[in-house]
Length: 86
Image 1 (cartoon, helix red, strand yellow):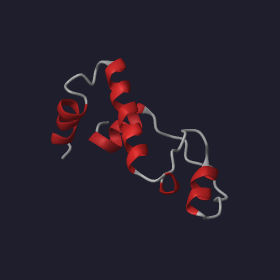
Image 2: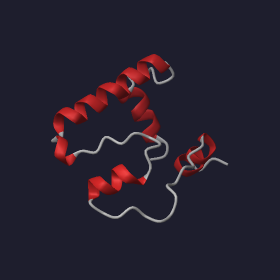
Image 3: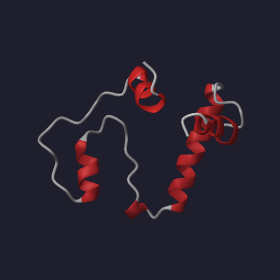
């Protein structure tokens, strides 16, 4: 899956133009709109990065944790987790 998934995303999702930032943003925004149209609003949380625990906990009707919201996700961390890169 580590090999095939990036290829599928590049070819299928981004029509082979994932390196074209404008095109990639357009594709992702269209996907967000498709999800919003398909899922009832009361069953969908559209989370804005940086909003912390509150929107998630409120949506799930659970208490806000006492610990800080995780805020690490650097490119190198993502690549390490996703692709096993050092």
